Image (cartoon, helix red, strand yellow):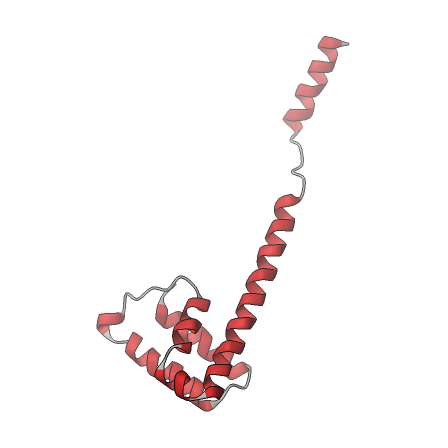
Length: 114
């Protein structure tokens, strides 16, 4: 995932959840850095990784409310990811329907043996 795109998503989620203005400003600052030509190719594994990076910024370290905004966002993302993994596990556990070919072959085997 592109860092700049991820930061834009995080910024929007912070705004939607009513985060502190300082939290949004912190993301804006990092977005400006990520928009520089030298950082254009920056990649992140996930949004959670970006939020954790934001939690380690000097702004978050010096302002508990900003840090709490990032912690809240991280928790929401972790809960969402866990729910997604659970849904995937349930879908993977569903039986796979048998093909028409399977039933034709089964019928032929029964004819041969019976």
